[in-house]
Image (cartoon, rainbow, N blue to C red):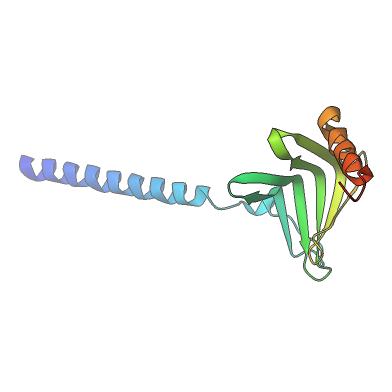
Length: 146
């Protein structure tokens, strides 16, 4: 009789552990799902909205440029991407960087042109930046016979 009671108690503990394990597993799987409150309704002409947008171009492992934005709205019908809080980094030769930031930007997906608007700031090393133009002017001033 006492063996039956011990078996019943052990069986009950095993069932309780299995139920707790299943509950814990289900709860952890649901953590990855987005709560309904966080989903945001998008306007009809926006196909997708991306938070922390980042795109770059690399050639042989060297990053030529990078565009970052707080958010991007892709509008396929208009063939453009609308950016907010934009930061563009241009990498020149010899680790020279220039940065351009703006409140908003628009990328034309067909022509790949970008238009920036609002509080635009450009930052570059003046010696390196203007040195490029001086070199180009010196080459263009040389006579044709040299």
